[in-house]
Image 1 (cartoon, rainbow, N blue to C red):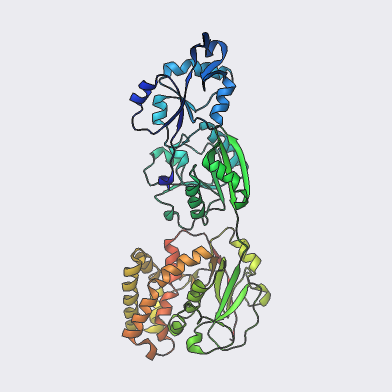
Image 2 (image 1 turned 30 degrees about the vertical axis):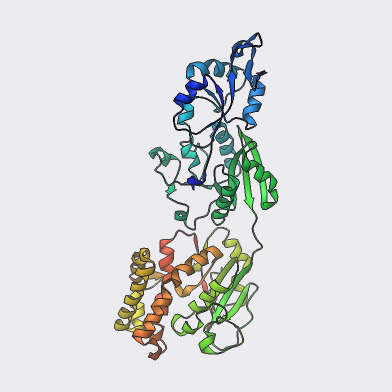
Length: 503
């Protein structure tokens, strides 16, 4: 995201302009004025060391006026051509209580980061983060490493990660646990806060939207009077909460995003024409395969964009496809007409032990996905499928799925092989998660499994097989959630499953 940053520093120059221009090189700048710390104006001599006077903005002014000028954003740097010229000003300004990283030599300016950086801003930010118990932070632009911070500074972070498309110095290992090449590489990981640097308003908006699924809180800084500060102050209602505090020559803004009202729904999938009890609040019964099984009077998976006709071969995945394509729930999940999540250690079925909407949402404050407790079996996943479908059919089905997986999602072949040879899995395609996670999983799964099913129908004549072996592809797809989870960084919460006997 660094490419979105654009910063042309404004310079108040103390020294000869011709010499400055001959030495500045390729570093961009905007000259906003000239200053002198000693000389003669209108026949009156002055010397900053002697009488605290500085000539700038065409008049003699004192140190507080210069400080106000810098902190207003009228200039980003007060620049001297060399250390010899700077030393008398800095030493005497320090005695008068002023020390700022905005006051630099030309060489210091040329070596400074390509964004506005003020050490005093960090010295205000880090204690704030500690005080507010921030434990995980994503440094989206590599701000700390590109600035002057090299360690966690005893801030007690659990984790600081960064995004940088450029190599960072090895010393940053003292600061960051992970450095991602791009924001996409962060995956589904969430953070207490995301830190971004000052941007133009249009680029800030883009970054704020991109970070929606990474953090509910974004921290940024804005120079006084900058376009970004004006935008934030003019759009306070866009945020659920805005906190601000001064940090050197910038203001830090802590922006908590507005979140839409929670739209929660767990779909209990059935393919049997049986009378089911009305589910708890937040649950809906959906009939899988209504196109081929007839209408049982429940909500069906055969409206809108659907694959209901494939239910005999994909089981509950036809309902999952319908959920993905035809709903807008912010949080949603899938369970079965006789399998429900519970938080109870006693998995004997009882209606009042079904996981409630409130408990599910509370869990998802800390986790990205709720799944069934991991299943440990004595056989590998491939051996289980062989038990149901036979060696020959299993081998043919596996070859078809590998072919389409290789075409659509080649990076997942290693995870696919790992799971097929493992004795563990998350069973039955049961889950509860946020919309963006479901969208990502469904996009991945259906990018290859529909085509694989169609090929299996043509070449293996699944429709002519008995009930169990014709579900060959469904047996493979039951393992696919585990395949996908193995390759993605999600915080997973396992819960027991209650099974209703006799239906």
